[in-house]
Length: 329
Length: 173
Image: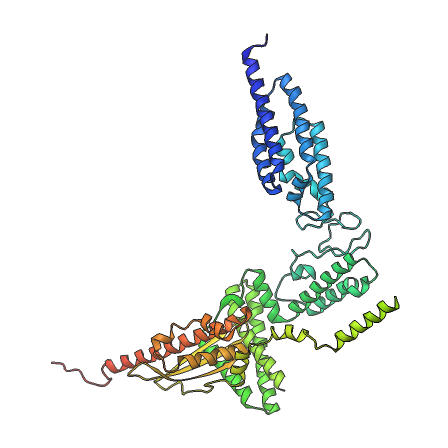
């Protein structure tokens, strides 16, 4: 005769497990998104119930139920589809993840359901099985799967395949240049030419469509980086952007001395058609631009971003004047 | 098979002879006709003497694109009504059109009334695209700056009139 104190918990536990199984079947019939939400909610009481019980008879029937519970779940591909997205590579990766998790469940019955089903576990496994390049994970070649710790990771050293563009890199990192307003233009040009020698799309015309796409992205970004860092004004604006300051969002300015000066210069340029006079104004303007550049060098060198902002504004106006004179000449 | 080939050739030939519709796509990216009209025939271009006590000058700039806009108003001191306006803008077509529209709208109105003109009204009137909305903002700021400048000049003049002139001896004794 089994004592009541042992019988009651067993009955209660089996009632809970069967109600959970029933709920799971109900959840399967509901839409995939709701299924995902309900599954996470169901996991919490189920894990607590399964892990806390210690009686042997419960454990034996519990394991069997566990296996049915989990293999049934992992057969549902639409659930993993809703979590991982509709990418074909992700689908094959998710199937592999499912197999691994179900194998773990079979061999390690003591593992918490919550841990097995957690998003973090799946993400960790996805890193090993998915070939979709993701920035936060360690660098692996999409073609041959070999690891590489080069930064920036342009080309795989093992198979020579061009890698996708790493959007997390700024222009300085891309061209392997120290982040500073002071830039050695010869070094910049040297890096630009070195990279274009193997990244240019013309050189990957015989490669796959995918690799050609990566080559075009990488080459385009290198060109953009080179021209941004070459011109002192765009370099200054870019440095301010990297530090979270945006000149463009400032709106209107009311700086009477500067605006008056610009207004007078523009009127002078408009009224005269004499090339000598225009050249004279251009030369004076070039001196002002050079002075601005020197002052910016000092400001960035001292980390004085607040002081750099009015200088960038001034330089924008003088640059516009220079453009206007060139257009007229 | 030959029939299919000739049919293909005919369809290509007919497509080539039809007028190109690509031009229609381009027109949606060009300036609106109102902007072009104001750019070709700007109203109230000119300059007043900024030292004139009845003139208020608003000088504003946009650091993003390097545009500069000067808007001047001539005010009737007794009624506070804006009797004449003029502007000078160095910038894109949208900036020129915005300032031209602004000078048209404020002429003949009270100073307090023109402060209620919003950049969205100007932008809507000219059908400015989102990328050119800052030009209408510049025009609104120019109006406000011109009114503020006139009021400052007026206040200064009144201060000079109310304080006793220098050199007047104070009676002691």
